[in-house]
Amino acid sequence: MLKQAYDPARFRDLGHQLVDQLADYLKQAQAGQAMNVLPYPDPDAERHFWQRHWAEGTDANLPALWQTVLDRSHHLHHPHYVGHQVSVPAMEPVLTSMLTALLNNGMAVYEMGPVASALEQLIMREVGLGLGYGDSCEGIMTSGGTLANLTALLCARKHIPAADVWQTGTDQQYCLFVSAQAHYCVDRAVRIMGWGADGIIKVPVDEQFRMRTDLLPEMIATARAEGKIAIAVVGSACSTATGSYDDLAAIAEVAQAQGLWFHVDGAHGAAAAFSEQFGPLVAGIELADSVTLDFHKMMTVPALATGLVFKEGRTSYRTFAQEASYLWAEQEEPEWFNFGKRTFECTKRMVSVQVYSLLYTYGFKVVKELVDKTYQLARDFAALINKEPDFELAIEPQANIVCFRYQTAGVSGEKRDTLNRRIREAVLRQEQFYLVQTQLPQGLFLRTTLMHPFTEIKHLKRLLDQIRQLGETLLYEPSLHNV
Ligand SMILES: *Cc1c(COP(=O)(O)O)cnc(C)c1O
Image (cartoon, rainbow, N blue to C red):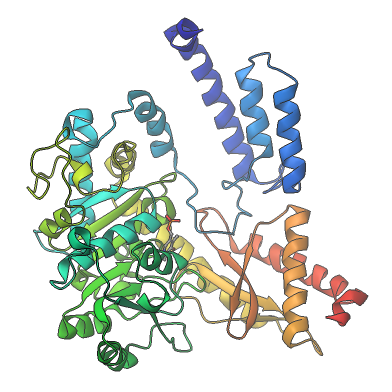
């Protein structure tokens, strides 16, 4: 068995078959006609399918297995994929991921991954410079924006002199400030750090769902008066639900005046920095102490691939001050090449090589093109929605996220929420489009994130037609009127 599992001739043969299969798949998915975007069996049906598959035993036909996985998966390369903020992967990082998976250079220490370590350093500096940082910036790559935000906040905590929780533990109450619309992972990070519910102070938002920075100084003063130790302010660039960009320059000013760490959660939208047209959305990002940015969102790299950049690279070495004598001698020695000192992960995938394959081919211009295309499409889609009396836009989009709802005379409040929820379910079941929903203060909205470089306004017109049809039908279901 082991001989077969490592046989180069078999690898060559199967590898060619796989690439052929994927190229055919890609062509079909992008054309978007012959397949549904999301085959949607119920979770239990899918589980039973695989239980049967396993129980039936194997004829070891890998191409058949691959085809089954392709057929039953969610097709992000379909232009009707307008759901969550996951990239539609470009071919360079995808192909390179086969190379790096085979090499499997583990990366915690330089010796385990020389190429990936050097490229990680190079790319994160280029990203930092692209955001407007000076020469002392440095960064790391990690597994997802959630972990990057936690890492940044651990570093922030270390930065405040009163707070050496890492060494001594604490019975004090720490806190940070973040908009009420921030991604839930900031809340989670606070609780993981042991600050509890009182450790996250949610700043109200304005009608564009941006942090009310005018309230910040007083909220900080209040927290301090209550005996809390303020650590950081987290800006969203952009928020997840509506794609709203906080005023980063305004937050920076307050954070600096108050001696707080300023972290930007730019997992989705920091990529706007690479576009001249949409760059102003992140004005002030270069004033942040740290920025999270997902390569697997607006930068066409498959998950997980996230960058965390520090304005002052040296601060990043403080995060995990801990001895691991079998890996390195001195933890706080700023050795740029031993990435395990600065990341949560020990073993890590060679993600930098995938990112490099993209940047080597196109430079950051490919990011600019995707941002320009999808952010503009969101504006066009919003204009279309504004023209339709039976649709309502939540807010004018700032990023490529559009929230809207179906509305019709005599249906409001809870009934309208239920109607839109049922529409979303029905869209899912019809398998022609994939979109999501979000709860905003004024009710439930349908939500699209336009991630696909080839989604056009004609596809979105089709989506509105489908929703209208469903809305008109579901409106007359008696159960709607019993809610
Ligand atoms: C997606 C997202 C996250 C979470 O990142 P993962 O890579 O999914 O862990 C955090 N914050 C924002 C603003 C996001 O858009």
